Image (cartoon, rainbow, N blue to C red; front, side, top):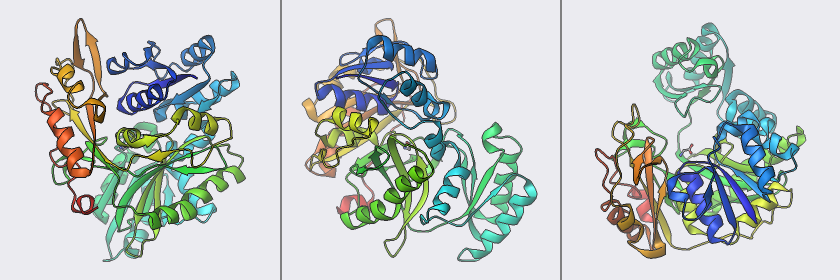
Length: 431
Ligand code: GLY
């Protein structure tokens, strides 16, 4: 097949890499320098929806795979389908699962999917009343409320407050416009305790294929300290066992797909569920993203066996073949190399050295996925907060970690920030 991947980050590089390895001809728009050896990169911007449709039609692609959420929420999949192009990614209606937290929580409630108690608020008075009510239910009383901006806020619109005062301050800041329109409506919800996990699944609107689990490390610094980021590294597999997977499939993913269908939403794409598993092994659905996770996709693609292109085309055309994918039993670890100043003010334009040595270091078992890079003359320079995702396979997590960090050690980027403990959580290591 000829497949167009929309996007330019590490997630898209991992998708392009897996699709190209499967023998497909791959185009990426706009793509990044890391993809150039395996795909044809075309300089069409992610949010140039008409430009992307024109490219897909002119090239006669068999399938478009959309990476980021912003074009999905803006309607790229609807436009592509209207032009007759099979597209992996939900339309505007389904993308509201990520684009509107109020919509998604209300959908969970309508379809009996276990989720934290919540209120949708549009004013300070409503928010204060909701915080008081939900904080009183928490154990111990008065703690534990989560304040979420309804719309897309670049991953920053969620405050897990330790007490009601912090929650009230967060609600005021959001309603006062910290995230613009995205914060004009809030979801205030009870804080759930347990272990957080994310799981990605593919769906054609009817069937569900759950992908291998991957665990993110969201904060900047070792030991889960420091500011939140888009994700500083991932490991797959995780502590999530088959029993939990079966419950998530039966109690969360399947009812979601059925609920979407019952409401007339034909959802074809990724359901990326953020979950809390409580002490009884019961899954609580926190939220959905409507696309692949980044950097979760990197280790998952490293472990994926089977024809991803055929499976994504099946999902895009309502004929998802469940069970066609399998997983390398080895572990994969992705270590993110971030720019100086990330996440507040990432510095761009620094020359990245050692890429060739890194790429050739360990054969097929190590891949350096580019996330925020650009060409400047002969050089590759940093062009984003997360610059690279060094992804390695190993017989176990420890071996994968050793390979990934050995390769990171070959990369030169002034001021680069790397967590040293990806895949080292006691729960991960125990597996
Ligand atoms: N790694 C978090 C995300 O993709 O949203």
